Length: 189
View: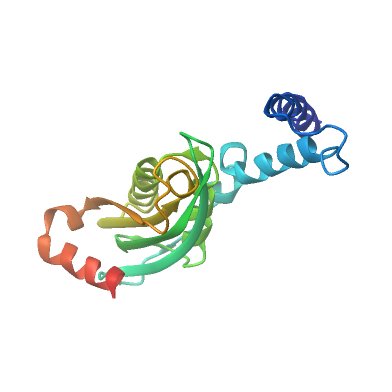
């Protein structure tokens, strides 16, 4: 019931917002727009409401692998906290396992979970690195996020196609320049 109540409350607020913008209430297209918007926000911000996506991530005993594991160009969509406009791009994750590894398919699931909330790109980058570092107890973690921000493309400076790149580095990638360079080469290749 909470979900239906949340949608009804959001629908009422969004209807007021659309009225203030001046959307024609007599338009057939308008009639269900507030409900569709409320449902969309629940879906887009599911990372705030649903921790099931990452709460049951299974770790496996490391079979003795001590080198870098890297997943590149994991697509993501998120919303900029400043203007509530989309940002989108891809995330690359490199880690050096300690005693545990994670199934490869879980890494994109974790990225999707963390991306599904309003935030700034720097926060997304930091939160992913902290999660992988803490959850995996990894020897090293490097997260790189490449994103385009519609708040820069649709409004303000209106600069199209600009990519913002942020990174967060933990463990041996931070303390060992050679290891860091190797991870960066893997991500950038």
